[in-house]
Image 1: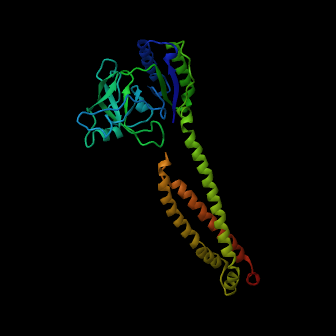
Image 2 (image 1 turned 90 degrees about the vertical axis):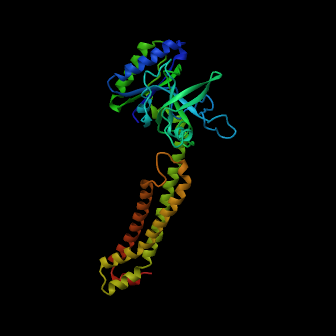
Amino acid sequence: EDVYTTDLDLELTGTPEGDGRVFFTELVSGLAASPGVDAVALAHKLPLGSTSSFGDVTVEGLEPPEGRTGFEAFFGRVSPGYFGTLDLALLQGRDFEPSDAEGSPRVAIVNRTMARRLWPGGSALGEVFRIPWSGSTVDLTVVGVVEDASYKSLFEATPNFYYLPSGQWYNAHMVLFVRASPERVEDVRDRVSQTVASLQPSLPRQPLIPLEESLALALAPQRIGAWVSGVLGILGLLLGAVGVYGVTALAVNQRVREVGIRMALGATRGDVVALVLRQGMIAPLVGVAAGLLGALAMARLVSRFLTGVGFADPAAFGTAALTLVSVALLATLVPAGRAARQSPSASLRSE
């Protein structure tokens, strides 16, 4: 939320690496000082985009899985401030800094899963792991641990993932991330366009769009599934409500003669309604309770397909239970009230 992105591809202009480094540095520093910009950062890919890998990583003294030369891991190139811009919690250590640049000691930030798997029982900070690079290897020192995220799919098993500072690992094609409040976003859009134009006049400028919109294609299958499941759920709830109403109303209507007898013997309308309501709601309440327990058990089976909501979501279960109880209450009160308003003789004559 409140994060906007645009694509910056210096390969289109043939910009040399040195000039590209200057462009990205001046772009981020210029926007960071702009009014309305809460945070700004760069990364070489969008979240939920395709993942990149140099190959298996190794840790001295740690035996790799059987049949592998190391541990499978993926990486992302990001600039300082990326984790704050995307609201990813830094669990240990530090963020990347401008000093993590070309020529400085190689560093990395790992996700929580990678820290736990490669350095179990201890802190990953200061530890070294090795990646293949240009026919040789490069040692990376861990300076931070960040919370796990979704990298390729919402439903993936969390992989080992590490982040590299873009200052040490240049890439000509980057994505700009800007965090801004909605009321200032138009000013920020103008500022981004002006800044890019002043630094790289020949670079084709893409619009600054919400991150949610940028991820629309990646999230399309999940959203379609959510809508279909939601519609089927609502239809099921409506069918259940109709069934509860019909059965409950029929049960109460069959007691009309009983109501007439009770009123003839001195029962008041309030007594009749209270009695029918108390007895008529037992079955619906027991059914709702049993249904909730069954639904909770079934929900565990589909929990791995859920994201952003727990399998025991109180809003979903509460809405369904409240709807069915309300329908049962209505189905009990309406015929009971109608029977209580009739004269005892009319009730006794009813079949």
